[in-house]
Image (cartoon, rainbow, N blue to C red; front, side):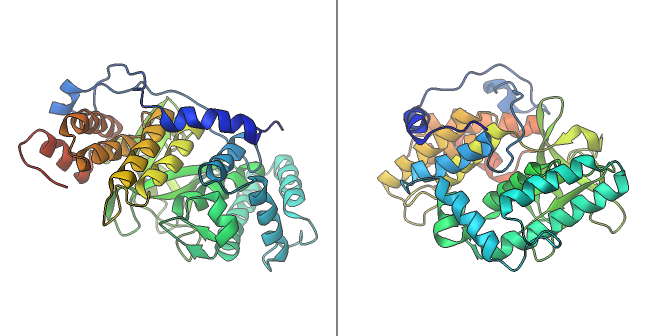
Length: 373
């Protein structure tokens, strides 16, 4: 399969990194009547590629971005590390212990593709997902919010965080032919809400049920209470899973506002543009001296702004990236620059079904005479 060369990507990267041009926008109505809807426009949803199997061109771009931004050398070092870590682990897939990782993935893809029995195929996919949950936690032992979102740090330091581990698990599942991908979590297993503060893997099983795989928890299948996902019709959406009795299997979804039912088959995982955007979002969020730093610096905020602008350019319908870019302008004392971003983020959130407390607070502050750091 074709891959981008490092030289070619280095030519593309500065355009993404330093561009500050506003993305193309079209008018759209929000999901509810609010002041934000009258003063901001939102980009039209765009259908993009949704698959990034391990070692494929889309997955390779995620890895290349990490190594290029951090100047950590050859991105192929990640794949070499992963293959070696699998070889040295005591968690090779049962019955296939003699196969190197890449051969195992190919063999498993052929086996699943040949399965005609839905029940047997569902059982096999659940076993693979549970095994990957255990494997990733074993070979990448360190959880780091600060730097664990970079593939180069996974290979160099054994680090992971929720988004990277989800993209990696999803990529490995996809390479075996399993219909799984990354989603954001806005409400955890305890019902505690956040502004898309977590990520997990959503697997669409052959028997018309879904499961959530979360390597941040000891057990593989979790009952997260609220997801941020994508609809087949081309629309991002907040959706609350409806679980099958006490089981971790999902049989449907409802909208957070009003409880409107959402058919299970309409929900899909995030596309590649969102995935790339979210990696850049974390770079902006965790930049040294940047927007999340206890002691912010001018240089750190500038770095956060560049990373977050790249995130918005790549996926202008990612509301978290738009909102946090506004927070950087706000931290720099630029209320005029911050307000339209807060307004656009609010329209996006409302259009998708829910306006979190943080974006709502900063939108109101930007329209008042008060000042908050």
